[in-house]
Image (cartoon, rainbow, N blue to C red):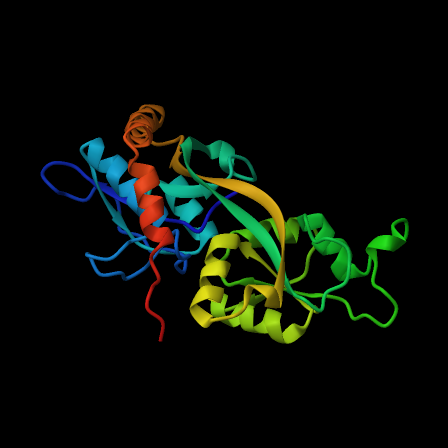
Length: 268
């Protein structure tokens, strides 16, 4: 499934753009930071990509767009690459995927007033939202308990998995706004998103960790994706993987991750 996408446009020597500069999805701190100053962390995924391409003698340029549009743009040859989360899903066969850049978690977050069954899968969220199927009464709502409102952050790639599971979702503009709704919902509003960005938003807002529940749903991997239709795609990914392997061996990926874990972006 496609991640919040980072199309990378590569420049040969001398620097002449081979592909159009593309736009991208809203940032997903700490994985993707948009508009950060050059001397500030750029995002875990972004920095891993930049260093791997540098070791392969290439210079990436980044822009931001919704996931589906980025996939379409790369598939049609108007951008060099994007980033997928996971390794399967509709359309993934059209791409050559790299080794894993890093792993991340997806969780369901709900206020501590929630008293229903665990929301530990996309299907569990769908069942709880609908009140539970007739053959599974324990998964339904308790008497007098309203059905769950399920929210996601606009452009979040987990939306596809939720919709596929039959969940009706509502868009929220940001992690901070979504967290506010979860806390005010007192157990009636569920947010499904990447774990690290939401916990970062909670830290920045000063929200007590004890004010909400977290139900881990899955672990996913971020992978570079190049369209199979691009000439030499398999070789390009192989070279990228070699650079990625060297970064693992010398501790560069671990160092990038550590730098972002301690980084707290400025808030308005």
